[in-house]
Length: 276
Image 1 (cartoon, rainbow, N blue to C red):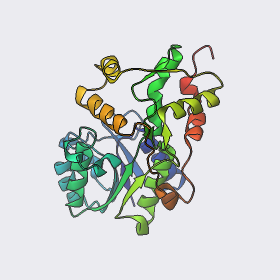
Image 2: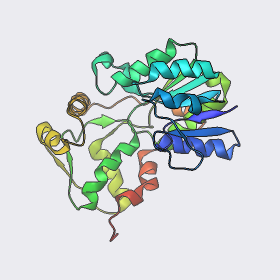
Image 3: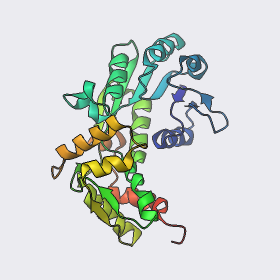
C-alpha cells in the first residue's frame, strides 16, 4: 500500500505523515511548493503535476481544491488509485452550501469524487482549533483581540485528532467509504476559548467587542471580502447558540476528542512574546 499525502505543509498532513512513518506504511508527500526532501510537487490546481505525484499510489489523502478536481479524478483513476480520503468541511451540510464561499469549493470536490469510480471517504471537520492562531499577533503585540461576535460558538477540533482520523480510515478498510463530521468535544464561544487560553498561558488575554464592519475593515487585504462576509454571517447565526459536537473522533480513533485546553497547551509557544 502506497499513500499520497497532499497538502504536505498543512498541520493535518504533517500529523498524518508522522503516523504513517511510525507504522512503517509507505507514503509520499505532495505539496505545491515542496520543501522537505522526497516531497513531490503536487499543485492541486495544476493537472500537469498529477501524473508524477500519483504514480504508484493506491490511496490518497486529499485537500479540497476545486480548480483541478476533474483532472485529478481522471488521473487518479488512470494511475490505479483505489481509495481517496478527502479533508472537506462540515460547512457543506448547510442548506446554502453551493452558494457559500466557505463551502462551495469543498462541495464541488465532494460531488466530483462521489460521482467518480474512486472509493471515497469524506472527513468533514467543524471549526479547526488552530483558527485561534489568528489571535497570536494581537496577543504578542499586547493588544486585545477584536471580536465582532464574542459569544459565537464553534466546536474546535485538534488537528492531531484529524490526522488520527485520517490514519484510521486509510488503514482500516471497514471504516472507509463513509462521511464523518468531526468536532471537538465541546461547544465553546470565542470568549470562552480566550478564557481557556488565558488560563493556559497564565496571563490575561483581553478581547474587545467590535462591530462587524469594524472587523471587516481590519481584515481587509488579509481575508477576501466574500469570505469575510460569510464568516460574519456564520458567527451571527451562532451568536449565543451552542453547536452539537459529534462522537466521530472517538469512533475513528478510539479515544475522546482532545479539548481546546489541550490544543492551547500544545500551542502555547505560538502566543508567547519574545520576552515571555
